[in-house]
Amino acid sequence: MKKIAWITDSTCSLDPNFAKQHDIHIVPMGITFDQETYKDGVDITEEMFYEKLASSPSLPTSSQPSIGEMVELYESLKEHYDLGIAVHISSDLSGTANASKQAAEMAEFPLELVDSRLLSLPMSEMILKGQALISEGVSPEETAERLRNLHKKNELYVMIGSLDQLHKGGRVNTLQLMIGSLLKVKPILIFEDGKLVPHEKVRSQKKALSYMVSRLKEDLENGETIKKVFILQAGAKDELQFLIEEIKNISDEIEIAIGPLGAAVGVHAGSGTIALSWYKN
Image (spheres, one colour):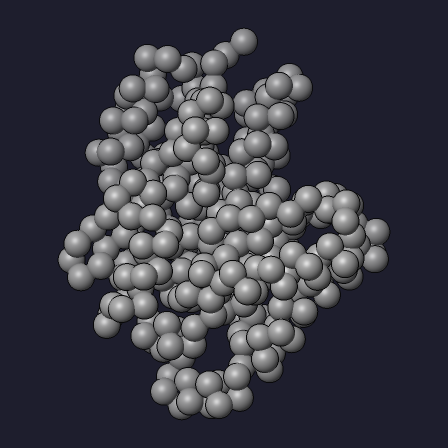
């Protein structure tokens, strides 16, 4: 049986110790504040990121790992593994997947590339599903192909926490900011084929959170099998607790996994942003 290395990036939100025990190699993304670059999860924590984000006069930037860094990883993997399966953040949010493919080619390391079209815990769940398929005897090629289509079964709703942050990034103009703030509008975004796109504008935070839960309830009522939900949050502890209670009111049999939203979205959405996601069937 071929020995397989699993490769991903730091947006996956996997515990490093768990990753090490399961042949999962995590490459850190770069986050730059005022010309100083940090390695995500290495030089800067999620908490530190949002503290800096709140005080920074301009938006930070997130960047993919360097080609050199990834070539070095694949060169080292050649010594211990027969091939790799790489699962990366949506290519519409980052160029990491493409860089990973190029680096593997340069290192002459056989690789099955999976553009997750997702991020954070839903992406890490994809890796775990892939490992389960391999353990069942599914080939690496077939496993990767199944994973490439898995995003089609995922629902992901994001409630924006900070209109100010969207304004900083040029996604909301001054008039929209003023009106939105006065009316306490909470934009909700969804993932569509790897892209974050506007979905709804809801008056009040509570209604926005309830709206996301209502979509989960609707899927359950339509007969979808949902065993686990993911709550991804960025400094949104009160909102997190509200969602947990609302989900438990729907069903106490659904597993709730909690993790960070990640810098790739947090850069634009700001502190207080929270997302709810699940896989259908």
